[in-house]
Each structure stands twice: as C-alpha cells, then as structure tokens.
Length: 149
Image (cartoon, rainbow, N blue to C red; front, side, top):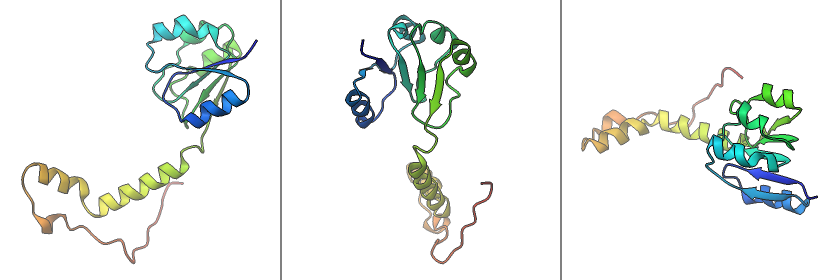
C-alpha cells in the first residue's frame, strides 16, 4: 500500500506537499507524549521531527515498519541513533536547511551587541533611561573578524 509518514513537529507546508506529491500519505500530529507516539508509531514507514520530539529507544522499538527518521534541522541529539541503527532505521538530517536564518540571526545579534539593545530594553522596563549609557558603537566602517570556523 501507500507509504505513511508522521510529522510530529510543526513544519513548513511545502515539506508536506513534496511528500504528498510523491504519493506518500502524511499525518501531522504535534506535541505527542512519548506514550502517545509509542502507540501510533508502528503504523508509519517514516517519521519527520524538528527539535520538539524526543525519538527514544522505546519509541523506535515500537516502530515496526519504520525505514527512516528525518530531522528537519541540523542536530540529531533528540533521536536515539544507536537504537535506530540496531533496528535498521536510517536517520537523516538537513544540516544546511537553516543556514540563511542562522546567518541573519548572527548579524542581528552583532547589531544588538554593538548597540546595547538588551541592556537598553531592560533599562526601559525598569522605567529608567540613560541614553548616553546605551549609545554603543556604529558598525559603519568597522571590520568584522569571524573566529572558530
């Protein structure tokens, strides 16, 4: 019959569309407890998670038809890869999937640090404001060095 995939964390609709267009039946069920996941996982050939679902050895043990666990993101620390390997289940991730978001977030954090945004926010919430204390520095004309790549 038709292959079945469970998506147990919120994910972009485009991912669901790709699977469905390939003839795969997709169920989206978020925020499942370990017990709830264990009860239904045996019905699925694949599982797609983000970081919210813990794919533990007991869950994998109940995954009778499981062939693949896909992690929509970089790390697989929420998946028991040893248990998956013992069961013959392939674990995959998408390490480059959030590169642009991570780079943009890094730039936002650099700007925030340069301009003391967090400190200024905390000061405002305390009904204080010392403008000169939170001026920070302009980034214009500065050179940024990235260490640790």
